[in-house]
Length: 186
Image (tube, rainbow, N blue to C red):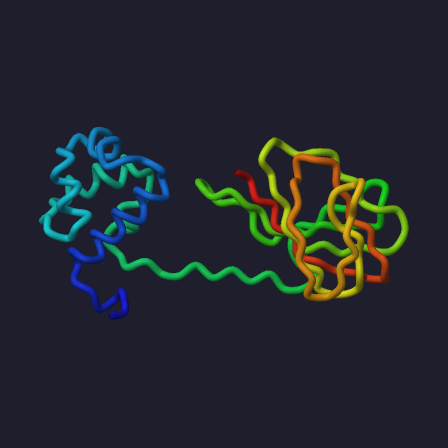
């Protein structure tokens, strides 16, 4: 059933669950911050409670969201970045550009980049923070990608994952090689 046709208590229940998960807080923590009983919040999240305006207002403050976000159906967030748009960052010593497509939202652990590179000097990356995994899918051209001491030649459609907390490289082997890079932070 479309969100706009659901009963108000169902919308409130799913909104509270979604926003509490997004905030990374437990039922106990949100209830404490809102000054309500944990059982009340549990009932509201299950769609069996009957909240007052004051209770919903306190919950919106505890969750740090606008009041309307708890009572209106969620709308899908769609983001489009056209080719050639988006914040691009060039490498200093290689013909390599990383365009940020999607930064890591709160409580998620990944960034997505579109890589554009030319043959020549490779993009050498020092180790990132411990636990980072990089995923690369070549879109066009060819490239050597992966750990600095053992890169792998990739062609369009090829995928590689490697520890980003070790020295790694991206070396374009064909003009205007492109790839999608996902940096996963564990």
